[in-house]
Amino acid sequence: GHVSFKPTIDQQRSCSNCSTTQLDGDFTVTYDVNRETPGNIQVVNGYFVHFFAPSKLKEVPKNIIFIIDRSISMIGLKMQQTKEALLKILDDVKEHDHFNFVIFDWGVEIWEQSLVKATPENLNRAKEYVRNLYPKGWTNINDALLSAISLLDQAHDARSVPKRSASLIIFMTDGQPSTGERNLDKIQENARNAIRGKYSLYSLGFGVGVDYPFLEKLSLENSGVARRIYEESDAALQMEGFYDEVANPTLMDIELQYPENAISDVTQNKFKHYFDGSEIVVAGRITDNDLNWLTADVTAEGEEDTLNYTHSAKVQEESEAVEQQQYIFGDFTERLWAYLTIQQLLEK
Image 1 (cartoon, rainbow, N blue to C red):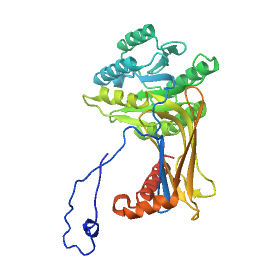
Image 2 (tube, rainbow, N blue to C red):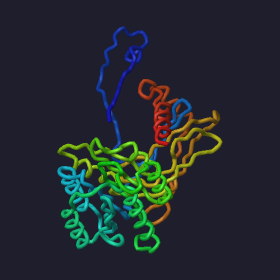
Image 3 (cartoon, rainbow, N blue to C red):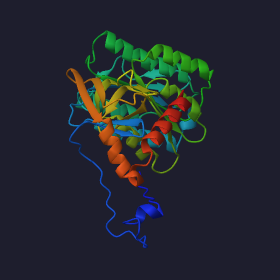
Image 4 (cartoon, one colour):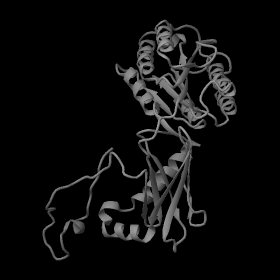
């Protein structure tokens, strides 16, 4: 992130009659690390932004399927770095988590018949399995995705994983489908129809040969994100860094609700997971000019039960405070709303 401070000449003067424009004083940046409240609403010039970042919540157990591309194009450094990253990630998997591997080339190989609990014994066996992976064959993406989704379906149907748990698929590949179903639109459709909003799919694309727009759309359609992994010496660290972002889910099925008749054009307000250390941001327009208080109601599923939060902001007081410090706030809420709106439209 960065801080940009650009006051006008008039704003730099301490009074309207002053001739000098030099700022006299310290430039202080204040930011929060640990918040006293989980949410905050800012209202400026008819727009609002709601920041939601609860802390000190119990971690929700994870069910993770790692889909690993071992086609022949992964030979050499890419496979070596993938192994290094997986071994490090396995060190960070919690004992209350469940996991499995789906390995694909021209076909699909599943490490265990079902998800296994992350006991020390199972983690050691998994590490040995990872160390012995080697590249071969072509790239059957469609069957790998459907196999991973089926494993999660079976685990939930058999109740072999906790009812309150976050199910994630982490898909790693360096290429494009070269065997099996090769139509990208059809692969996306198959994955979307199989997942049906139940799980999150995250994609990691290696190098320049990967079809990154395909991975991005595949993940965005299934409550996830895609990341490009650059073929450099720190590729393993890039993969580990991504895993750290999704390693600690604390909430599931989050919904942020606002007064229906008072606001419009709200950005995305439903989220599959919330991860510790991240932040949910929702913005919208206030259409009721007589609105005194803007109230947001948040519901989410936690590790033990349903959680409810309520955040409020007095519209007039917020606007007056901003007007007094216009050079600090400007029209940031409107610009942030526009940015989120455009970004989410591009993702569709």
